[in-house]
Length: 613
Image (cartoon, rainbow, N blue to C red; front, top):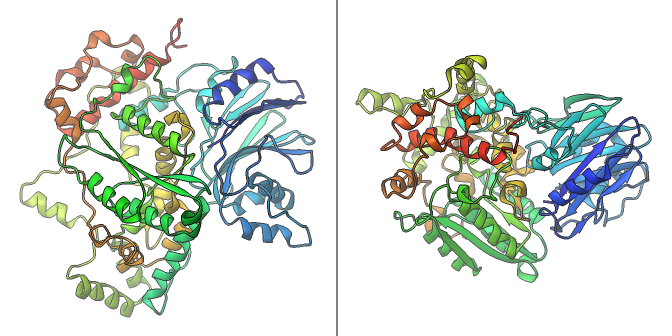
């Protein structure tokens, strides 16, 4: 995705061009096609272009349609023609070749702040009204595109790349201890606004930030709606509508020249690949190339086998990367390797190599991310909903019909199996409070109470899909997708996930969970005759082995001794407690202990000659 950054000074002061040049240089990796720093009274912008398509893109930014209001950001819109028709109501003509950025500006002219809720797609951008001296920043509903900002006495900086905001001298390097605490408790930040740095903030997904007269306001501009369930007379209608939306979601994300498919052997990514290969433009112009990861030869991992089988079926080339001989945390040994925030990903080096290879083949990568969110449902909430609505006939036909067809009850997920396993003496792995936190840091942030807060399930009022709705409206997907952003991978490749298309999500949230979301029934029926039967009917299976304990047993890696730990991490972690029981841990405990180790590695990388300020 293209890179952007900017600074606004409401008093009309000119930005420091040297700082802007440094920010632009730090963005260059995102967009090799063009670099345009630009200043105007009271504001400065820099933009690194990554040409992707299929929709037209503004070659230069900031861009404007009236010379007064300017947009700088990364915009990919779905439903462009529908939006264009709405904009033309009233007699105004909008060119068919209008870029996505221009459509966003036309929408701003017509609806003002209300325009953001009408935009569907992946976007993060800033609109600068040079006449009124007001800045408006917006981030898409799911947080697919990142957006960061930092206040300083004379104004505000913003960018889609956190590291860029560490360049201005007005922004301090002070760490955010609340973020550090959350990271040590669970491996990522639990607050949607905080970053690892106190002065740099995230804009929440689906939120608008307004900055004017030296003050900022934030508000939510939209949320996922809770709509009435779909009650079709013919079961085939669910499959037909899903297939139509799925085809459109893939088509809108598919460039006209080349695309990567990040392919596993599961149903989600293989369905995306098969759909992409069936779109007419693929047969004529777009070249598809599949990339796959597995853990051969560490253990028998079938992901590469199934992925290769599909690639042969679709007649597209495939490369399989084997992680079985990888060394966990190999990237940490590279002195030039540094993530913007601490990360627990043990195979980061392989992850980066995958994206490096992808960047040599295409600018856009499709994935099956999001397929598990709603398509793997549970029947408990649906059962209760039908009882409350007194739809007893629907209840009987749905659950009894599923039993007759599949010879098993739909998954209710009421915890019955776990209780039975407990009665039989099978102890479930429990997530425990980490015993290795520094006591002073623990008391200062009241981390025990924070731990309890993080363990509580997110509330959800959705009648059919409460867990999916909570996941989609929470911070989960914004965190996950940041790992695939160019700022994390270092490669100019834009990840696109058709299952996270808003049209797809709104449709699936209205689909009755039984039978359509039991074991991805809807997707399995929609791909009949498209996927090989071995893949279409393959049950979802967890990874056969946990690679970290196996690699630990082989001596491929170990936790660092306390003597190698930096002073800064000792403010947060009791290292003797971490290292006392490091060998022979179960997989989960290994991951738990990797949080302090990951923090230590990251702090070592962000240290400055004078130390962390």
